[in-house]
Length: 504
Image (cartoon, rainbow, N blue to C red):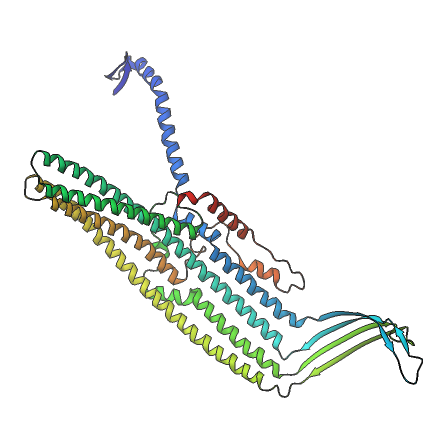
């Protein structure tokens, strides 16, 4: 066994035998601090790298928790939940308390005992309990619940839009970073080539034309580098707008093939049964049909129970106190209402036809988006294979052109053209890799499955049922439950504005 040991300021290579264990132990003791420092630095570097890296799932979780568009849609759904409580109020009584106080003067001719000035005051309590409202209450509740279901489907659709935007912004940053590295490398190569061309010109191997061509290509590379940096800054700003913070050490995400169907027909079946846009249209049409019944109920009789208790003081000179109570059932039968109710019924029926047409449109839209997304995914996969072959071919061609230029069979312009072709193919490959990720998530979105349930990226998931159960059948109280998610979002954006301005 061979080993290396430093002894008397010299490194020696020896064969380890039985008599050399003492030397070996001394070498291990001397080298141990260096080995420990190396292992520590390596493990610490790996830890820091993994701690600072931001995966696509991290970005999706941040967008889910902090994107204002999604937060606003959640608040809109909570407002829709209150429609159910408003509809259920049709079963409940109305109680009013009335009070009055004033001054009264009575003068009659001929004079009577009731003449004079008094200061009457009193109060009354009135209760009105609906007994029958032409089935308007029950149909209003059904319509409100359908609106809630439509609102939940709309929230799922907005969630898809936000997550899709987050995916696009993430891979846009990754692509611009890759292009920036390619442009930086291209500028270094052209700078070295310009220096080499100038050296060759000094010994008479090339002409001023070759120097001018090299200098022009280097200037173009510098301009392209500046543009790549500007594009990267723009992509970072868009990422911060959607996700809520500036990107940190992004890398190219992996594939999500396990979440995608294997055939286009299967994808269409999934989309037509699960896409939230279709669910939203279904419940909107259902709510419209219940609204027809609500308006039609205005033509039916209405029965209310009224109870009243009143007490008045000093209502006249002759009356010091009076008390009155009553309980009555009142029925109202509408006979003709100027034709307004019939017009509203016809209007509600037309809205039903509108919602049915929108439902058919949603199904056609989902089907078309799935077919388009499926075709885009297949095209991008084929494009990546072609671009990989183009990059390999251009790299081989560049190496050959450089060798031919050395023996005079090619010019410097040929070398510059070959380098530009290689750069263009590498940029196209980086763009195709970005397009592949976008196409996969776009297909998942067209299926209606781009959400935190399919992609478990968020630890805390917004549950709309919690607020619905809280406000359902709630009799009183005007406070609302502001979720902690909104507060964290506001604080997060304040910190972003205060501390991230220098990163733009």
